[in-house]
Image (cartoon, rainbow over all chains, first blue to last red; front, side, top):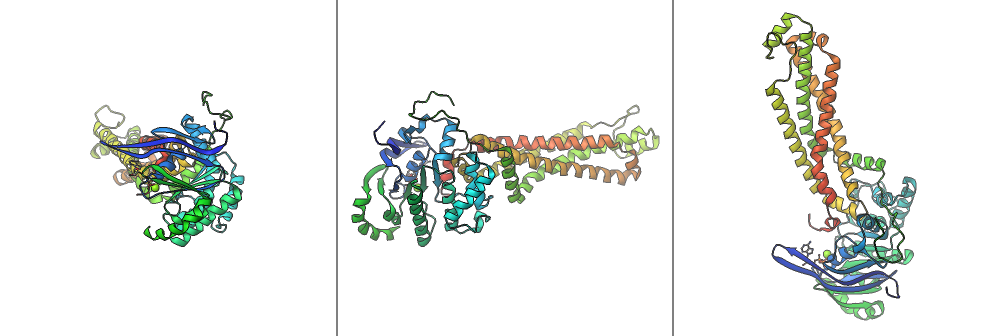
Length: 248
Length: 228
Ligand SMILES: Nc1ncnc2c1ncn2[C@@H]1O[C@H](COP(=O)(O)OP(=O)(O)O)[C@@H](O)[C@H]1O
Ligand SMILES: [Mg+2]
């Protein structure tokens, strides 16, 4: 074990996909250490392996080789029950496509992870309403996802990700399906939450709007870490990068 | 959950995600309600097959009621109505052709249910994957699908069985007149309706078993797929 406690540690992770005869190596040996409470952006062009890495860190898929540690626990060692517990309590997920359960209301979506965690109904409702108020949807908790705009659905998803006070929020392209200003709102919301709750946020994105709020940016290209920039270094390069935003 | 793991500083795992039965029922019911039209289609073949089963059995019950009166005229009208009655027979039984038709219709119905439920599972891949990301265990997913199918089964089969009985009586009325109601052996009719309902429930559960297993085994990464 290292001296410093890292909330997430990725050690030489590779991931190979077999598609018939073709072999595709999506991750070619990634090592990372992420400090508790940081706001991390994983940046890279489409197809660079961000989502694949996201799935590894989130315990949603297994690396072909290498190890992922959450809170210094090797998640490959966890059985199905412990893995479910990890997903339920330690990690909150935010998806590009929001992934609300559309037969449930906003509030029910937010309370579902609390139910899984064993919280009783009244406490879950109360906390769910509080979380929805926190993301600015205090008056919408009886709405179904189909009655909400994309930005509002993503707010519900953010509230849901916080349901069990996770240590980490993993967001894969959280602004990918949103327009510019709605995307900015979600980024601001995530930043505020990271400051208020101290939760570690790891967000895979190719949205350069994320750069301003990140404590650290991990640049990924072709399944490899290209460079890691901390906040201090960033302010220098951000100006130059801002101009590239139009490409996307 | 044994203690063979090596990770450092982790307390022994009594950490189990849960989904209380009441909550499962609530979710399953809600899911059916919201997808009412689809549930209706899934259940339609069950309703039809069960009503056929119930129609045949209740029809035979009614015929047996007539036979039990010992009235030779009634016996004659039964034979005219197409019942295969030998000189010495005192009961009508399901004849082989009827039995074959009933079995065939029930089999078609199960295949229909499997088909409809597989489609439902495919439509719900993202939802199931998301639930797994939120911590759901395989068996929560399995339970939700079985509960939904059970509820569809009870309602669909009860409606089908009652409908079949109504048709059998309507048929009796047309052929034999109001005497149908006097001659009908009510306990046996009720038993036939109950048996048809139970059979329908069972078929609904049998039909969902494989699709539900597919759903339960699904990997949580499915929730991530952007296309669809
Ligand atoms: N399940 C999979 N099967 C086969 N190839 C995959 C699969 N998932 C991702 N890939 C491939 O891995 C590479 C990285 O994909 P991904 O991690 O989704 O990139 P990003 O999220 O950065 O756009 C891509 O070339 C993609 O086609
Ligand atoms: Mg991606």
